[in-house]
Image (cartoon, rainbow, N blue to C red):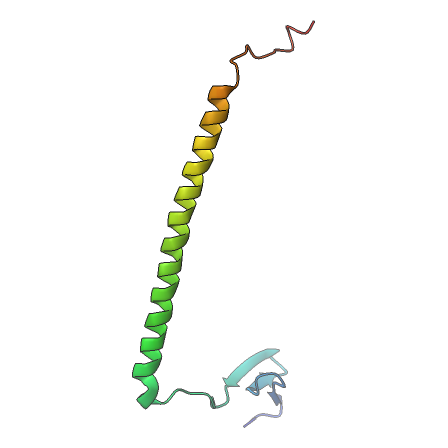
Length: 100
């Protein structure tokens, strides 16, 4: 693959892609990715799309339930704080100036 004497052909140990590096330029001049082995078949496309649609719908339903329970929890906390505030006596707040 390397055509010039200044070009080196290197293979990445992680992904297996091939890089052609020009030593004189100090740059990568070509990059070739290996053929993927885990490509989905065209026959499975409908099944994959249906599975992804079901996963998205499930995540959406979970987010709706979480939002509804969050609303209930906030309402409960507000009512508790309101009860506590109504049961406590109203006092004048202390200021630093009053403490002298």
